[in-house]
Image (spheres, rainbow, N blue to C red):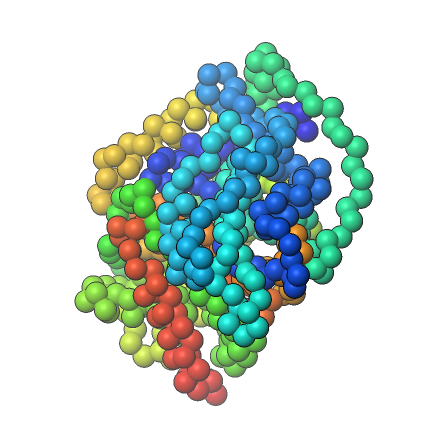
Length: 478
């Protein structure tokens, strides 16, 4: 890959990034070192990544601006300096989970330098040993810019980095690439050709898109009429969220907490109630958020609304880019009876799924970008500076994302990975992000929030555990 201009959706994550809204994702891992491990995990990880780097093109590219930033930048080849990309983070000896979560909250707002490949790994040595056998533990917090990958692309990337046994597998030899630094004229010529292709593709797609838009407009009008006539909000695809303390302009601070819930029990519970794992995640999050807002004496009379990413990726596609759109679903937080709340979530989830075909038809992954870098970056800065999140209607209160992950134990540089807590993006107007991923026999929750809107994410984590206990007490529907 000598040069590749970013697709419109990928580049959007660059243009929307500000000091208050870093646009990288990642994870917090706790790792158990093998018996007799010598040296530091920092150096072991650098050696491991140096061997895997030829098979990780997404980590060996950096941005190059094109035409004074009037069009999307391009990816160009760049070898990362692992001394800069894999770094040690000091913590007091014997630190535990809460100290790690606080460190993630401190590190997450730090933007990734754009003159380097857009990723970084932070290593924490000398954690408290395992409580049962005293095994030595370390932790790893990763950052990877969302312009480079979506959730499923990150999983594919991890499949190259991680191993199924403590002994790292041998990777096939890959010939060194002939690095080529494209000049300004080459970058500009490539960008103009790309733009011309985008306009041609749009012109060809107009007839079908207009038909889809016409149908969507009719559906929206019918949904609006349904709401005016008192139709159930759960069954309607058109909804506005109640305004809460989460619907605000966010600061450059973060609060992070994590939760692991037993996957086997969740599967047993959700099957007994005719729910999918996604439904289970929505019910647990809605129940926990209801308790959080009750504790604040701020529970809205209308249900909270979740923004839910929807993957557009076809099976087997492991490309390092973004292929997703967004839908919304109500969480039934206004309903006290947990049986009725679960029924609401199931109906709302079914309504969302029924509208996905239209969303996939309408959502472009790439589009012409002439002038967009200036326009989108300026709009993002203005949106935050003018506190528009407090003035515009709220479309959602929280982002909830469920990313499928591996259900077997994995190893990194010989160390067994014990946890895989996702760390994702909070944005203006939606100060809380809950991202969930399966790993091994657990469902791993990462709760990322603006530190001013929700300074105590640990309380929400506790409510998630309580939500599981509440679900255990529910009798399955007859």
